[in-house]
Length: 406
Image (cartoon, rainbow, N blue to C red; front, side, top):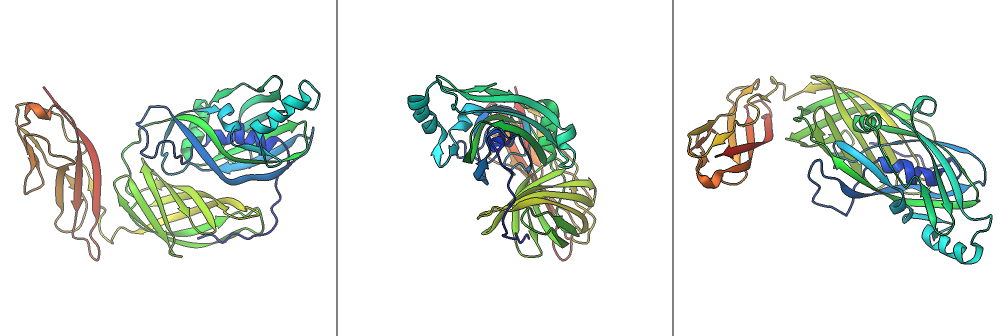
């Protein structure tokens, strides 16, 4: 639970913030109203990512190079990014200068100042990495990019794709960006969102994060003194969906992708996004970034080291059977989930999301029968297991795909 200190923020100045929004933030997918149901894996889709007051009324200094160092987190609804392409032109729709939308400002200048020396222009270079202390010296370089205004607003290059090294940084859960920018105007700038096209990849099977985790936390604060202390987290998991509640009573919601749990908390005063990454069966590193909702828009990076203290004080219950084997039309089929660990009697079920013609879940939890012709295709099957751990049973859920062929 963070307590942002509301003192004047020392904001970086310059058109570099435009470049930050146009060229850098665009590497960071975020929540979007464009596709509330979520896309299919590997299929590119448009994402409009709100910047949550990260760039508001920032002063621009003409012809002065500016360096800005920022750390950004993926939201939990984008657990794994396969590709990312920035749409700079689409992002310009979300830029305002001196409170005027950029496209409207350009139209005014085109009518009054067409071809004159005070047309808007800027250049920017960027570096991307995972360490804020070294990103400006050794981060992955992009650019230079130019924004100019002649017969129309021109961005060169108009789009840019994240390379494999950058995608790896993004999927580690924390991305640090260093910008060096120069503009030719004095003004104030705000950016409320970025536009991009991304494709999500497929996650590995979710690791087990359930239990009580204890450790220490440290958070930076760009408005005042850093903070830290002890942390207790109780993680509840249902397949890939998970949440944790900290010692202050705040609940963070998220998604598990392999051995990484991406989470988010959006409270009254601040938002925090981050990752909990397993480093061993019962050890993990928690990294996050927080930002306040009101001026002066403070924020900082957090780093926690935690150890799992209990999994119900019982041997860990693990589903070991994996995905159900494929079946064939007209041939007898049987699948029984298996587990390891747990306490006392372990109950196991394999239940289709919708009825598979010819198959049923028996009283012992086995999915069995003879598939009919109507069963040919793919079906979702959930495996649910639980034990008799005291004081609370361990419950594990895992979704699989079952294929029936001719």
